[in-house]
Each structure stands twice: as structure tokens, then as C-alpha cells.
Image (cartoon, rainbow, N blue to C red):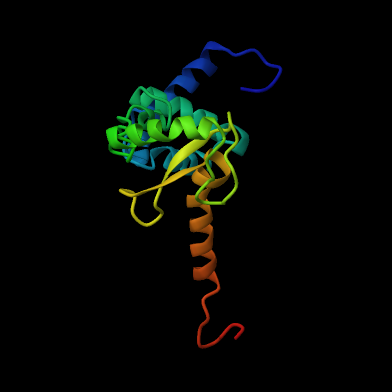
Length: 172
């Protein structure tokens, strides 16, 4: 097909043959639809023949044709972990309800940062960083509780990256 030119029945038939080849024929065997990494394999294979601006959209269409779903939508159909399995079961809910009146009255200090939790401010009942079965107390939702894991991960990554070695002993 060429821009500015009408699509003929022959063009449509050629396009259908190619779609069949890649979704159900010999090309599908190369891509292995339904096996993890299928979309990436499609991009690599078709990238040899199709421009970069088109290849991902084409592979998305082929993925849907071959598997019945768009890429990565199968992840959305996985069962979501329950609140209990994530550490927020009956005990957590009961303890949070016990803290609620004092937090809403502004009488509680965040255990993580030491600043007050103001009335109406979002808050979480924080787990211990080392043992999730232990509760430390209320903490600010965004800047303390939900940011803690990211800060821990960044600190570990920094330690790993800047570990002194024989060749580079670091500063002492």
C-alpha cells in the first residue's frame, strides 16, 4: 500500500495472507504465541520488515488475533492477593480502628518521622520494616509508610554499587 493510493482487493488479500502467516502460520511458530516473551519476539521478527513506528501496533494486533487478548492483559486476569495475605487481616483492621479516634483528633505522632499526623491527613498503620507481623504504629501514608520500601531499596542499591573492592578501596 502506498499513501494517497486506494486500497485494492489485491492489497487487502496480501495483507490478510501476511496476518495469517504471522498469527497462525509459519511466522507464528517463530514467535510462539502464548509463551512468555511472545510480544517481544514479534517486535524483533517483524522489526526486520516493518518500520519502528508501526511494529508494536502490528504486533499488538497479531497478539490479539493469535491469543484472543492484547499483550499483557493476561496479567490483569490473575487473582489479586487478599488483604489478609498481604498482612492487613482482622488483627490489622482491629488495631487500626483502635488508633483511629486519636489519629483523627491529631493526638498521634508518626512513629517513622516523628512529626504529628494532622486531622484529616491520610495515614496507615505501619508494619515493622524487618518483621511484618509486628506493628509500629500510625504513620503518614505517602511520605512515610508507602515511601519506606523505595528508600530501603535505593539504600541497598547504593551500598551494592559503592562497595569498596581491592581495586577501589573507597574513602576511609
